[in-house]
Image 1 (tube, rainbow, N blue to C red):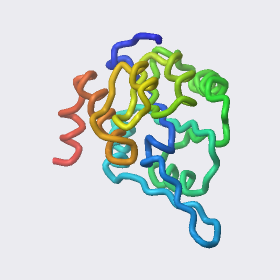
Image 2: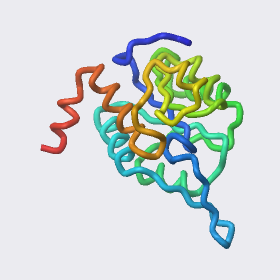
Image 3: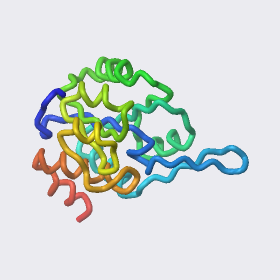
Length: 171
C-alpha cells in the first residue's frame, strides 16, 4: 500500500456497488435495474467538489442509474464497464496529470484491492470485506450507500483543515 497523508489528496475515486449503494441490485419486472443512492453521500461529493477537488467513478458494471446520478452531481470522470481498474486508474492519472499519491480510493470488495494498493490513501466503507478493510488507511463507520462517502469526505477535509470552510458554505 502506498502511504500518503490524507491532506495530500486531490482526487477521490469511488466504486459504485457497495460504496455509493448498499451493494444490492434491484431489477423490476421489465428488467430495469434500480439503484438507491444516499443523499448524504451526494452532498459530501458536492462539498468536496465545491472546495476544488475532483471525483471519479471506476466501476466494472454498466448502468444508466449511475450515469444519471453522476450527471446530477456534476461528476465528469465516469469509467464504467472496466474490470481492469488498474488500467482505468493509469489512464485517469495520465489525463488529470496526477500522481497516485494524490488519490484516495473508496472501496468495499476484492475487485477494488488493486487500485486501493496503488493510491496514496485507500479508504474502506464500514461494510467492506475484511481484506479491503485491512488495506485501508481509514475505515468508515457507515456502510456503503448509507453515508460512508460523506464520512470519508469529512475525514479528508478535516485532515486538510478545511471542514469548517465546508460548513461555512451553508451559513
